[in-house]
Image (cartoon, rainbow over all chains, first blue to last red; front, side):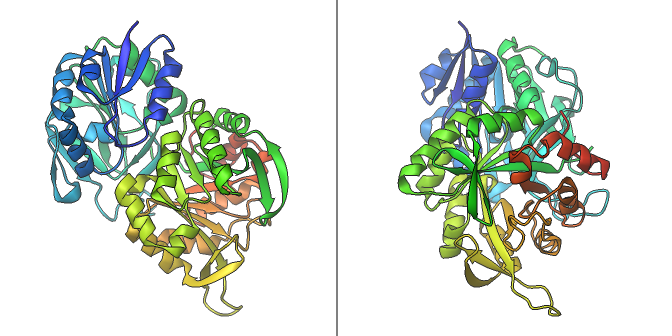
Length: 213
Length: 258
């Protein structure tokens, strides 16, 4: 039986992601875990997270999970979600600038103030709700229609140094990277566990992914 | 391509059962929360909001259980409001599977609670619910005041100033209910909605007064709301969420269609 570890480091609700993984693959062992041994033993790893980056990084340092994440991000199919995506970049603008894990080289920046849509209405921050995802071919998008809507809630977004790392983009109002891919690491800004059918499909694809683009 | 405007059905829950108050009295039973949540999810609801309307200590455990059950079967965002007063209340709801909590009276009694909650759990999960009532006389410039206790107690606090303050304290979203319109089926208070939505940088959910599908579209087009919330028009099968979305789309509003 294949297994997936959902990393629990005290940053947010993991109930939904664990339930969603179980629903799409009842035959998979889903473990919500916080110890290094369980994470290293799993076939796949999901790295979720909501909240502020400084708390996130402190929790990772405090628990010693930073090093574990760096190891598994080189060795097995790895999915970062929301803050779990942002933490993979090099640094983050929030909290006056915070160093992150530097697994995917690049920066995490705030949406510009005073953005407006094409009708001149101000765009709200956080970017909250269902927006369209335009992707490049990758196994994790299998059976998901191009430009499907996923659920987002965030005020910062990733800017990878290498643009070929961008696996999908979304407009708000300009294009930003809503998914990144590098070898066995895939990361999404939206919440697949809250994105109904298309989100569940992405999780299912992840559980069948061999870690190769 | 742009962000869709959201339609959010609201389920008032009393001791584990969904009910809907008309002006917060005269409650009718509309069923089982899990069943209703699944129906709305199938019809294309963008989020669900649960309002715990009894919020006695015993019933809080019932609500946690309801959230757990719904979150195990329905994979869209869930907000829980009603009786959220402590950081521990928030933690329990988030751990049960809620994505956001609505804070109402507790914010009025202690605004610092909103700041602490946002710092602890992140602004993305803190919705400040504002119950506002018009207090200006005819001929005067519009003025709305914050009310508590289901609209019975005035606070003297200006609604627009309050919304700005709550965002400054860390609210990630505002759920705005017009106490003048709630239960009337006459449509949102559009000037109120527009005034609040224009005053804050975070998304605003319009609530209170929806009686037909055009009201939903007006909330977005004239009220400048980012999301619209309704209860009774969906609960009793008058309209489906899908009909609501088709209607909004016919008015040129971007929506998520399954």
